Every structure is written in C-alpha cells, then in structure tokens.
Length: 60
Image (cartoon, rainbow, N blue to C red; front, side, top):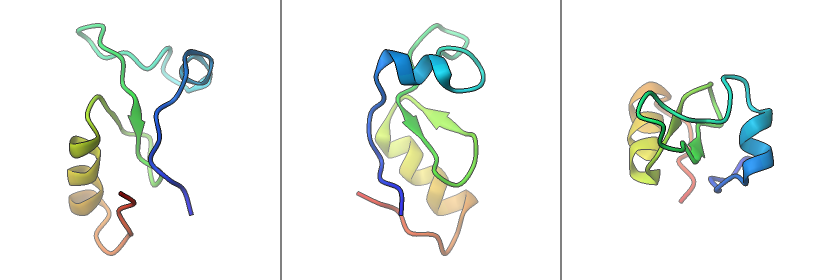
C-alpha cells in the first residue's frame, strides 16, 4: 500500500512530465498512487482519490 508523501527534487525530475511543475511553474508535490495525476495540495489529492477512484483507500 502506498503512502502520501512529499518528493524531493531528484524524485520530481525522474517523474514523467518534467520536474513536476504546472503551467504557473509551481511544484506539484502530491502524486496519486492510482494514476498519473499530481497536485500542489494534499487536500486536492484526497478529493481526487475520493472522486476518481471510489472504493480505493485514501491514506492520511
């Protein structure tokens, strides 16, 4: 089971899609363990998991 955690710079660079930055250049730190979505805020990731992956556990 995966846990929600922040990634360091090296890990962000190794993720497909570049350095984990969005259009505004802000770092995306929280990655969905079920798909390729990423978010700046943990709360946004939790909302995504509940709506896009119903029945899957949300790890707090």
